[in-house]
Length: 382
Image (cartoon, rainbow, N blue to C red; front, side, top):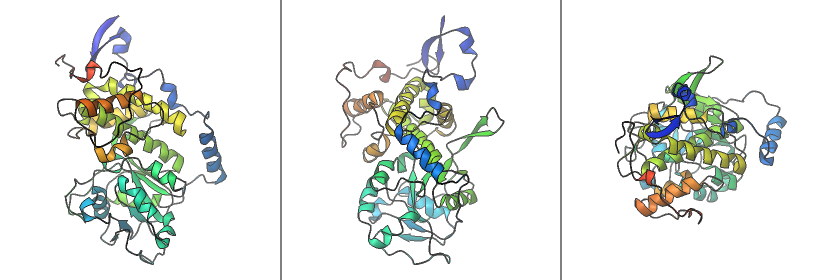
C-alpha cells in the first residue's frame, strides 16, 4: 500500500485505484443507494398512485401570459421575482397576494401563477389566501433549489400541495443578485446546466439542469427553452428525486465551505474538501431513503461534484440564517455530520446566530474535528 494525495487528502490506496476513472474515485460502500428499493410504504403507495393515473406521457400546457406573485413587502422582493419577469415576453402580470387575479390572460381562463415569495414567507402566503386565490391553487407554480429558493416541500405538504398535478420547478438557472432591480432590469437568467459526458448508452449526461413537473410543466419548459435554458419536463416522482439531489448540493457545499477561516467557493469544496462533502452527502442520502422514501438517481455524487467543478467558481459558500430551515434543517434522520458542522459554524465561526441549531448527540464528545481548522491543499500546503 502507498499513500497518495487525492483532492487535498492523504489516504492509502493500491496502484490500481490510482488509475480508476474519475467517476469511480468517489465511490462509497453505500453506492447501492442508487438502486431503487421499495422497503418504505410511502414509496410503494406513491408508485401505485402513479400507475393508477394510467399515464405514460406527460400532459403539456402551452406557455403564455402569466401571473407572477411577488411579496407584499417591496423591501423583500426576491431575486426569483426578477428572474421570472425577465424570462417573460413583457405580457405577464405582476401581483401581490392581496390583489385580485385577472379573470383571464391571453384568452385563457386558466394560466400559470408563479409564486416567487421567499420560502420563509410561503407558509404565511398560503395561510392567508382568500377564496378566489384558493380556487386557483392548481395553477400555482412553486420553485425549489439554490440559496434563494431552498426546499419548500415541508410547507407544501402541510397544505396538501405535494401531488402530481401541482407544478413545481427545480431552479437550474442563474438568479440576479438582490437589489438589482425589478422587472428584468438585471441581466437575464442564464442556463447553469452542464454537460458531463455520455452514459453507457451514448446519451448525453447533464448536471444541474432545471426540471419541472405538474400541470404547467410544458409552459415552464417552453419559457425557459425560449431563453436558452435547458429544462426537463418530468413526472412528480422523478422531479422529487431531482429536487432532493439539488437540496443535497445546496446544503452540503455551503456548510462544508462556510466553516473555513478563509473565503471558500463551491469549486474549492469540490477540489480541497471532497471527502468531507462526500461523507456528508451519503449520510443525508441514506436519511432521505429511510425518512422520506426518496432514493436518489444513480450517479448523483458524480453529477454534483461535476457541477461544482464546472459552475462553482466564485459561488461563495454561505450559511444564511433566514434559509437555515429550508437548506440545512430539512433532512430526515440523525444527520450527525451536518449538525456537527452547523454547530461548529455557530459556536466557532459566529454564523447562524439567530437560529436554533439542533445539538449534536452527546456521544460525540470531540468536536470539532481538527480537519476543519486547516485547508490541506493538493500541494500539501495548509
